[in-house]
Image (cartoon, rainbow, N blue to C red; front, side):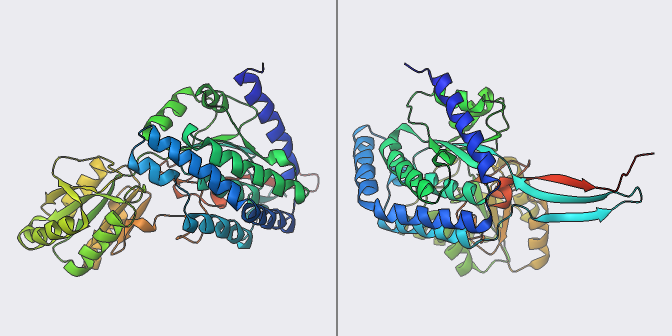
Length: 403
């Protein structure tokens, strides 16, 4: 029986070979493969939904929390969005080969900084089956091969999606091994992936903080991290209160299990007598539980921490101390305060008078995203096609020699 180490190494070699082919495929070829993938998903729709229904039933039987069940469930809307996302990625500009800058030097050399694929990307994710296709589509358009390892709760769903992806690639004349799925429940597979130096170029975790920390501790390859989303809404004393309540409602209630949902409300202390009764009435109506001791907590549910601050500078300090660096918002009509907030809050995405729920690759015009990085190297915030590339320097001369 093949060991997990040997399995991952074999997949890595296949992915590396596939990546060498993908880097030579032009934009038209990649777009044709994406259209083939969208059609294959539509053809296999019934199989995919049946597999997902079985996964959801098993998860409910195992007592998995509602937030995880929600992420696991593939609804009609999510399936359509997933297929549309693949087709949208095909319409996006191809980043590979883009000349970022070019210059000539007195020494006689000419230099071009050019985008190119990362190579082999390993993505480890939990629950959400749409992550499989989103990441596969983005990696394919950016010229990367991908190895995916999903959570055990979505094994059937991911296997069905993997079969559709392999069929699509083969039809398009591309290596089926450009998209691979690790169908192994053992956590050892994750450790092997992030230690596959020379085969895996970068690993991207999409899941809870426990998964991310475990991957980072085991990793020998670079890991792009997406830690928890502790997102704040600060309501300034110069805010439009109707707008503030509307933004809070969208950020907390629309999809509380999302990483860009608000987890903490900060209120200017001058507003407390007027605004807090409005918040309490809203919370009662929407079933939101309010807390006053949850600084730095990612609830992923209809729970919200509430704290008072003396002003916008204290709000900035509070956020920088308790935020996860994901998405944070100020609601105010004072443009000078908003400018300071946008400058001084050290998060990947900062907002003025807009819901944190916009932190999303599709909403940012990137197409389907591969994740939202709270790292600072080499990508931060929603990760689209450009974030799935690196660059090289192409240097030319005419017998140039360094003196």
